[in-house]
Image (cartoon, rainbow, N blue to C red; front, top):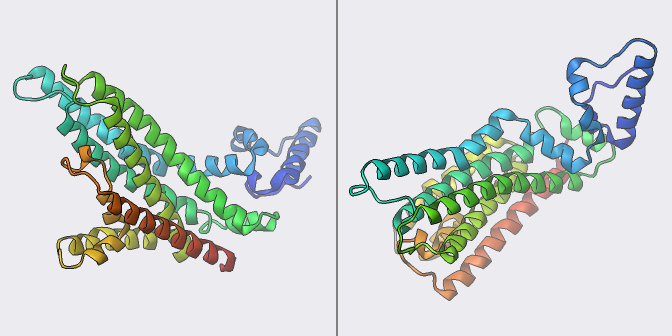
Amino acid sequence: MARSKEPIYMLGNAGSRAVAAGGENDMAGGTSTFSAADKSSIKVKQMNFFTATMYSLTHRRGLYIAAWLLSFGIIFIIALVMEILHITDPVRFSPLGTINKFGGLSSIMAFLSSVAGVLLGTAAGVGDLGVGMLRNLVATGRSRMSVFFTGLLVSLTAITGIMLTTLVLFGIASYFLGPNYRLLTFSVILRADLWIILYVLVWTVISFGIANWFGSRSIAIGVILVSDLFIGGILSSFSAYPGWRQAFIGTTLRQIMPAVLNHGSVTRIETGWQAAIVIILWLTITIFLGARQALRREL
């Protein structure tokens, strides 16, 4: 029986069963058309589309390891060095769980994890285009919107798993390694964690939408870096243009960060409502543009 050369999870349930049946028939006849790599991917045949898409993203080992290093590895190394310095010289170096150190490390974590979210979001957005995977998926009867929103959900699930692991371990370490007077309370840690999750997920969604809009990971990453870090950074230094500053999503997200991450500044209620509107608009527009382009893209 001729065996399809397409990746197994692209063939759909019927195609997967046919390939599996063909493999069984070949083996019953004394010959097997499955290579060692095929046999190792037997599990993929039974996956639903979401699981298969998650499998595809997380098995880009370089990308996934980079995401873990950015979100977890670097913070772990910095925290470990800080705690070792405190143990060796407690007079000169404060413990890990002080307010200042928690706020500083959490800010670093938010930035690095947002970079990881951008990498995963852009990869999930257009990673299938270069290898022709989207064409195969559509040919098997998958709707483009199903592929689009499954990719979005997969990118959010992947970065959320990494973030929750990092935040839980870092929060526990910060709380129990803090000074005896416990200025770092559970509520302070929770507010900081919720903002970091919001910050990272918003950037992941935006990067996914922009990547689909342009059809290129590199262009999407470049647009995000130039718009937020360069243009947004320049405008943030000019107090004469508060309205323009508010239009940039990075600036808006930073305006609602908790006091522990914002040098004690408390977000005003009206600023919070304005930020919510800006965030919703950014998410809606980027998803709309990405989905529109995904529907119109020639395969």
